Length: 283
Image (cartoon, rainbow, N blue to C red; front, top):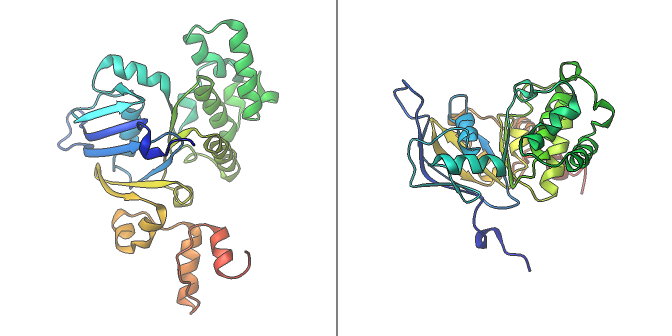
C-alpha cells in the first residue's frame, strides 16, 4: 500500500515566509505557510497584488525569501543560494507569457535548451525531445519558429521545455491568462494529463473554473493566507468570496441565477457536470 500524503515529506514545506520588494512599504508575502505533497494539485487564487506571482518565483528558487521559519522545496533550503539553485532543477515554473521562456530558433531547440544546459548526452537529448514533442502534440511543428506559433502552441512549447527536464513539481503562474479559448483548452488538457500521471502541481489562476477542480485551494489576500481547504468550502463562503473579489465558477453562477428564478439547489455545483446532475439531466 502506498503512503498517504500526510505520511510522506511534503515537496513544498513553507512556514512563516516573508518577502518584500526593494523600496516597498509592506511585505508582498507575510507569514505565509504552505505544504504541497507528492501528487497533489493545489490551486492558488487571489486578486491582483495578493502575492501569487511572487509566491511562484519563490517556490521555484528564483527569488530569495526575506525570512522564514523554514522554506524547503523538494528538500532544498530556499533561504540559501545553493538550495535555490538545486530547487530550480526539481521545480519547473511556467509563467503566463510563454514568449518570456522561448529562447531558441525553433520548437525542438527550445525543448532541448534545458537539457543542453545540463550537459545531457546528445542521443539522450534527442530521445527526450522526441518524447516531449509527441506528448504535447508538437511533432509537426518541430522546425517552426516560435514567433510563428499560436498562443496555445507557444505555451505548450514552453511547457514541454520545462517538463523535458525531469521535475518533481510544477508551478504554473496563470498559464492560460493570455490565451484564446482554443489555446486555453490545449494547455489545460496538457496540465490534466500531467496531473493524472501523478506530478504535483501548484496552479496559480484567476479563473475560478480552473481552481474548482483542484485537490485543495489556497486563497491569498495582501500576501497572507485567507483560506486553505477544498474548493467547495471556499465557494460556499459567499462573504469571503466577495471580500477576495474572486467570483464563482460558471456552474455556481448559473446555479445562483436559477435560485433567483425559484429553482434553488441543495448544494452549490462547481462544475457543469455537477450542475447537470443536480438538475436531473445527467447521472
